[in-house]
Length: 390
Image (cartoon, rainbow, N blue to C red):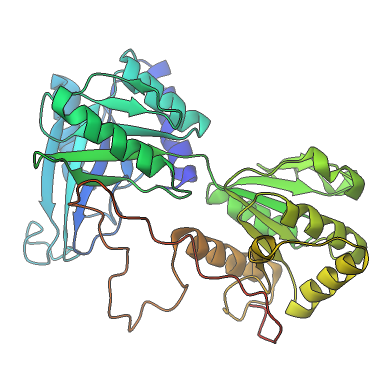
């Protein structure tokens, strides 16, 4: 579930509580075969039947609302299995060919674990919520520093703590249902900071990139020394930084930052590229042809500014997928498509004709030690040569 959906769900939940409405959250906790959404996808259901966000492409929502209304009324959580095969989905022929498990729980804002979990989601803080799928086993909220809040069945606690802490070490942790040593199913939900997009340059082509990224839930930052370019009207939803090149040290990217150099000004681009590569950000991109990035590196080398092989390995140029993009809005789509593929470990190729699974292999059932996540993305391109920009 991306940050934009989480933002919408939490906003609707706050408004519902302000009106005195009760609510439930439905969460996909298991997927087998083909389905529109993956584990960790959430939907909010209010006591009047209204819903925010979706668990599928429309196959499940009406049925889940009915379950949720009963959960809101009784306070008892529910775990429901839905078969989405073509023949089994209520005879309507709307199935996806797989099956999903959905857990529905009434939202109790006075419960300490619930309150802490919602606060972590709201603040974009890393946390893991451990929810055994058998009734009466309790819940546990775990933070990266090892703190744990809640009650959990004693025999499950060591497994839950190990699973949560291991998952929180990943840059892109994914929710999953795991199999505990006793064979029971334990769902690990995750909260993470939204991915950060930092644009060095507030030119015309930065505007659609900022807007589309904000709509996808990115925490967008735009850096430019020209204050007249840095206006909320040009970059709605973005954080604006009027920084001259010599003042860039004042900005420290986050651990999930994607930095894109796009000043269209050779001197500013050179300084910005040095700032980006010397930061700890895992992704650094330069807009334009490969030759531009190589020229910037050569100029920096002449000035005595050098980089380690590990720093250079994070440089990507050209950026974007080969979509034939031309207009600024198309270029923005191309770049964001690459960022999504890179973050989630995909190659950005066509799905048509793809013989394997569309999504990663499921992470359950497993027992500790847990398998490593797929790599953050394909290896960056740093060598010489030519290729289309997008």
